[in-house]
Length: 350
DNA sequence: GACTCGTGGCT
DNA sequence: TAGCCAAGAGT
Image (cartoon, rainbow, N blue to C red; front, side):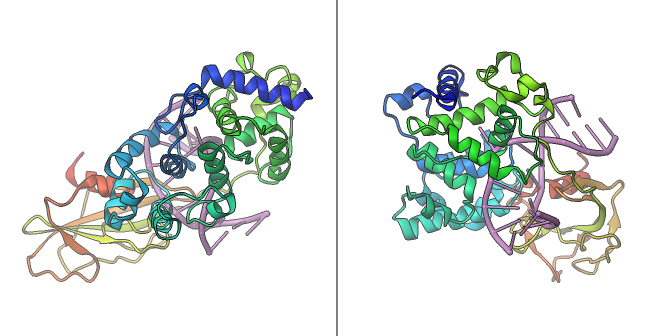
């Protein structure tokens, strides 16, 4: 039967066959039709990187990761510090910690192959409802309902749903489920996301060239640009902190590997105070610490941070209370998360 | 359901 | 400029 949802699905796939984005981790719809299957490892890696992260930001990281670790076994065997360093700058570092846990679990518990079963995928570290469904759909062509920000936006507009997020999620998922076909479910999932990324965009949606402009209820009602509704966000407080860049006489830098839990967990950084309204100075070793001119300003998801950065030369016999010295030639600023790299650049004058 | 958890680009 | 936004997961 050709009900409305079937027509929408067909129009979407027809559009996708022509307008699918060419992405490094993707099999084109033509190749897919010819029987080429995506590499589950690359699908998984891309989906983890793409969580709350733009395609543009992911591309270079994906290329470096796959060049350095071509398969899940290679990644599983990598030292933690190398993976965290390669992830530095991409953000949400729990993803990198879970990435390694997941790779090692796939090797240890699944013989180095990603499980095809949705529930088994959901048990893997860092794989939640979205990613499990995405891997099932894209890598294994299973008719799972893939719900991400794009799908939420497209569904809320297609059906003119004004219930604010996140309360609207169950209804939006139900609508998405009705549209999910049994034929080419993987391409369908990617088609909805491509539509959301290129046509049904958050601001100024290109309704005039949308393949779903006829059935779209929000287009008809003129409400597309204001959907989906969202519950208002809290204002971000300002926190302050002190950071200490110590350089030993031989050029080695005093750094610390941050604890796995919490902000920037598992990442390399300069030692410092807590980040709060009124932080206590916390030099990692007694020295003549001097403040750098200027401050480091950085905004995280839920607060603004202002760091006062101190620097000092440290004698060769320094035994720091916190952190460890990293040889001048072994240190790569690119191993630092962005806020720490800002402090490094302030010190070096860039 | 409410928080925590990064970053860079765009308006 | 300041806020909004991106293929969410874990607690």
